[in-house]
Image (tube, rainbow, N blue to C red; front, side, top):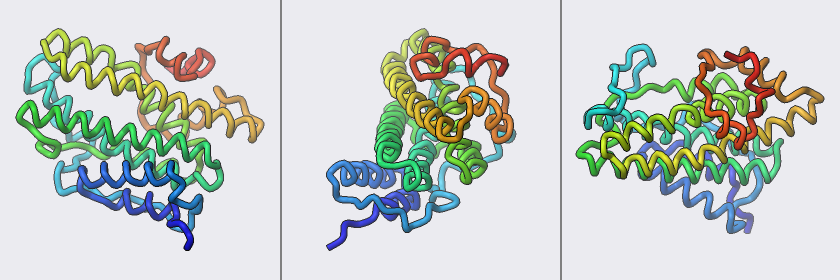
Length: 264
């Protein structure tokens, strides 16, 4: 009997709306993949839009209410909720990368992005649990779907996807998370700070996966990785890349000064 296709398992996880069920579906498919129970086959297309729960309400980014910087408990809860939403969407971003580009990119690429999906599932679960401890829950506040806009914009090209999602959006977390950790520590919220530090440590590895595979694609295409990255970011990223940069974390993730020269 033939093993179930990896692409079908990924598609089913992406079309799971309930956050807890999505986490379990993602963990299960990663476990089955690592155990050799899913075939390296991609006959099932990835959904254009993943399933989403009824809550949180999704608003345009410019319609989102302002939140504090993490000094008050209310501000910390709002920030944790925003981060939980980012990690929830990041599960689908990682799954989509594996399912959409895995056939062309190979098993090592799939291994890396399913590992990222498992990490993002764990990050979401940690943040959701922390929200509950603080008397709130994921879905209690509105959120925006700007992250998935990046997936739509780059669905046609693996290099564009890697340039924008891990090498811009996730790399931004390397810059801002240390300051957020310090604010939570200053407010006496050590438990949240530990969660954020764990996420930061994993995000360095995620960005490194992005730079590694991006550089491999550029080598095949005969392009300079820093030059190609800047071109693709200009074409497919609607925001601005602004300092300050966490230079040490970016270097650890493979984003050398050659990449960052002239972008801000």
